[in-house]
Length: 220
Image (tube, rainbow, N blue to C red; front, side, top):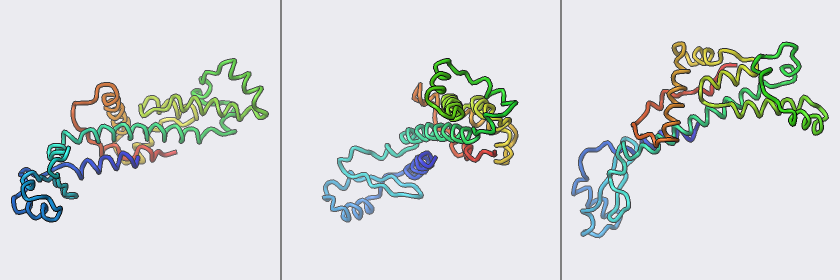
């Protein structure tokens, strides 16, 4: 999640907010400080935001246009991918943490747990490789959870249902103090945009990334 935050912050810091080129006196002052020859100072340019001042040197492969909002959108697209990956990883690890002996020995296990498919090959392998079969059973459940885990809200519901945790996203809404169903809607938007990034390049435009604050702070 930290990667996504850094990408978003970098995008905001690098976005040029000025509308005019560098003034001649500023070009001379910066050119002098950087030891740029007088004849080349006309080619100095800058991009500036509230956070940074970027000087574009003569002959640079970058131009000021590289720092406008549209050119910097690849950073936001990668932030979408990082956020979705963070949610997926969190969901898997959190759900796996609920897989314990009590759950596996329950006389009335959750329906999601009962419906996990197991092949005959897996059963034979557990019998052969594990002195304590519960360890093998736990691995089967972990593998299923990690395969099913996703930022998709329907998948999140199935993952947590397998470990006996229902209505997780409703609890997330309560934890985040947002309206009922808002977390699910935001996750659906996140997954849709992640899919656009992965499959079409997502050329539609920017996204309200700040609305994706913390899905990983899920209530038990």
